[in-house]
Image (cartoon, rainbow, N blue to C red; front, side):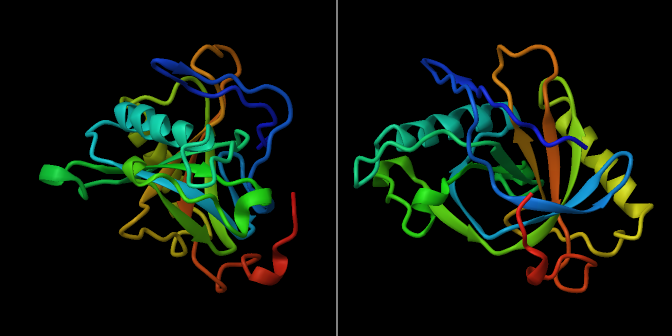
Length: 217
């Protein structure tokens, strides 16, 4: 699987953010690879998270990112402007929302420059920072647009692949993150789009997932 290199992300009406050139992403190494998925060991990282009560993946991503966009444009206590990073991550917990709908958390990767002390978001944005320890994630890439109609199917394909592999008993589903969709492209980018499904993999018992293996990719 090829790691996405470029990123021109998400138009959020009425705001449009266009990012070009090299941008920062969380660092990882590939510890296992198969034809339709790979397992990556990600280093410790910090994300800004926007919980949302929208009942669809697409609406949750749009409105969650709208708040994150305001944050990186200076809606924080330091009035700091933060450069765009990749990917934008929408974490999905089926059944955890109102009337057993899905709950969504839209996440922005905080650049290394701010990881030690992320700027505090303005209270009205309802954002919070999440510090993730070094851990493994199973990843499946898919092309086209990430829609309500296909993200569940793509997650199911990853689940099937994992169930038929040596990683079958090592995937984790927590209350905060059943699976996530990582998006790397602008909605105006029509060819060669890259999205990913992410599912957490178990801790030190998983081969290659010990923290001592956390070198950069």
